Image 1 (cartoon, one colour):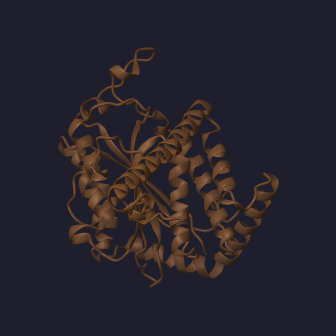
Image 2 (spheres, rainbow, N blue to C red):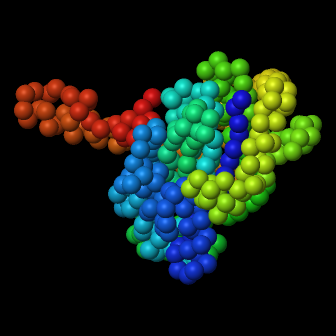
Image 3 (cartoon, rainbow, N blue to C red):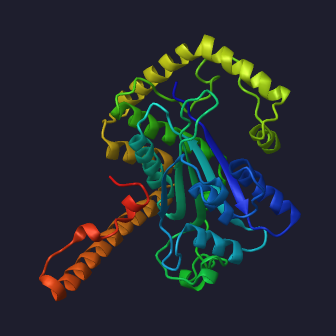
Length: 357
């Protein structure tokens, strides 16, 4: 059965014992070691150093300012210049259906990044380790700067400084932070849009499964849910220390699999078919992305318009860069053996990071 799981976290600037606990809690759970900053989190996403493994499927960096060499450099400077106790990054971990192909994981992760984070600098990594049942456990991590890329060139120090007051010249202050991400209601809308994108991806690949963003209670299933684990309990579990709470969760999981899952699967498939029909949603990938974005940003039209503007600017920037590359290649080859264009020698950014289409 395809599952929908979204976990949200924050990494704050290290500056006191309390912030170390807040920032390191999520990073420790992911990296399984004592990491206390955003740069170490990047190393985990890339499976670098001691964490290197074969479960990294794809990695991508998007919308970084011109002065940032890469994601690690960007978030290292965020830690340096953000105010004390300031937020360095928001983190999102989203499950991917194991029913999809590997390219399906990548496409879905890419679609979610474009729908939610087009206005922000972020990195994304798709991992596919083995679950406890021996099957694949694909998921994607996003590490997002909540400051909005408004197209104004700033130095790193200014970029992470306080934004100019409303009505003042934006160029005189830092990049403004998007406060919408503090909204609990927005997180609910995010789950709904993730479900739309996930179900569309499953349907395109011919998978007879679906996910639901609704709670079990809202769907009419009155069964015991799993007991939430604290960060400390999850870390202990990763070290092989099984608690009574986890044993109870395993019992509930077996019961759900044996008694409830077939009904839940049928309900999710039926609900998705009805939703797609009601909204006239076609099977195309672009149609699904547009619809998911409309649903997510509907409560804030201004942010939605800004999102679309950023997408258009990014597309134009990519086209301009590609034209410049072609021009440089032509000029270099003309001086050697005629106007031969060897485009295959150029580095395609998306393919380099595993997102080749």
